[in-house]
Image 1 (tube, one colour):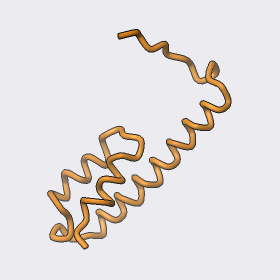
Image 2: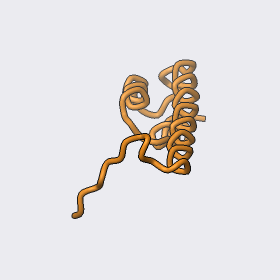
Image 3: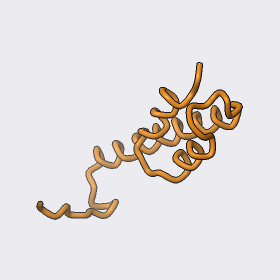
Length: 77
């Protein structure tokens, strides 16, 4: 498997910089929405332990994946 060359921020193209900033902004917004939703719900309204969702949302680095999974499957209707 070939090694991935790491580039510094100033070596990235403007398009790559915009993409990275956009993905980070979407991830931050989804994460904030999911954490706020989780904080406002009773434990009985959450699929799985509330603390586990909070830990996953706060600690795992995923470009929007964990918040989307929580919003789609972690909440009871």
